[in-house]
Length: 186
Image 1 (cartoon, one colour):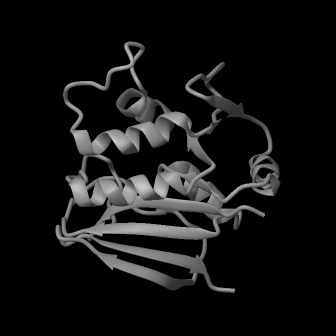
Image 2 (cartoon, rainbow, N blue to C red):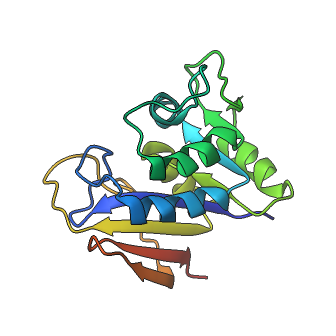
């Protein structure tokens, strides 16, 4: 079975909002690019899918936008080409190499996990909470930034019970951020 990995930037006070001041620098973007390249597919909810599409989809012109730094392009290319699965009851269609997931979430994700491959990535806030509740996430990576946001959505806020994790890898970055990779304790 291919693993499902949840990775996200998080502040010291647990905020996971993308506007909490945790934009990656070049070193972190290289890390996120490597993480994206490990994924055979990504799974997003509607909000994250639309946000990622607006920022990272290759424009019809084929040229990346002027705001994008040269060192961000490998991440954009990796994300642009990976198959995407979008969990949504409100979208009627998706594109950008994507397909909709509707119906029984646990069953749909189990079927995706049974397909051959190296692993899948899930992003966002709400969907990963639902997947964690179902016990479907095999690996958690939290890139903790030395920032206190003071507000915003919190990491896995609302989890119904305690989840014990085992640290399997730790990496420090020049910015002071620390990537911590965990697996659920068995």
